[in-house]
Length: 331
Image (cartoon, rainbow, N blue to C red; front, side, top):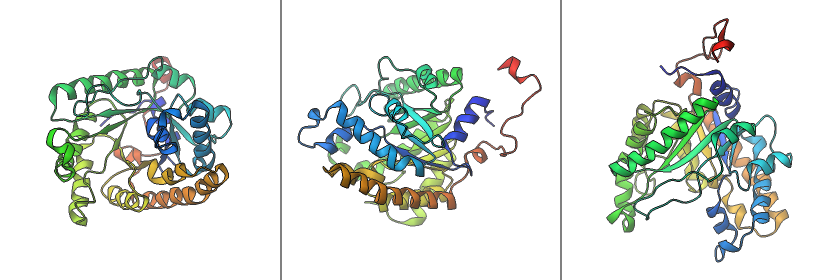
């Protein structure tokens, strides 16, 4: 059983709700958000516009989430300084640079220059998140990606911050032009990836749904795949939305939580339609009504079915870690 340190416990408490369930909203999008704002000319979307969208997302949705995930460039510090991040809502901050190095079939994650776990700790965030493109069957590349994760994991141990990892699979070779073939492979990839990533000292896995519901709808099969994912993960896991439509994400969250997930970390499935609305007032109204209602509905599903994070660690709320009389001397 993994022994939790006091700082990591505190961070996990901050990003979960009072029942130990993660009901988190992702807002750390960068290039994908630019493309939503101006599909034809994303490069023309400036810093001010990006910050404005982050402030809108945070001010309308953060109060309904146990935590929000923000990026360091446009969102994290800005939402704090504008007072739109409630003190009762946890803050996760991303560490990776946007995009990836290498070609589409050989993706290598890079960390954001001049940004670090130490800075995330200093700004008062609750946890660190990194996205890694990952194919367990590309051995050499997988090894490089695991090295990056392990390096960040050690920094998170040093600064005693929870570490959340988001591995994302992607098509290679013939799969690139054959989505059905990639969907077949994805089931195995997601489950094997969970095993690889959580063998490292990470604290929460942000997992893809281990099937493509466009090609597989059989409920017992889907639940079985999520059970396999659950057994492969050595830490609490949450399901990500990957920009699917909202109703589909609700279905995924329900199945995943029934199979052992500790909640969700959803982004575009909750708010993406709003980003195509040009009028600021209409956009904010949409987020305040439709977006808020979606987050509440997902929270209801997770609260009903999800496994509290501390149960995954085999501990009880009354004693998440054994504290000796002289703990502060060794800390």
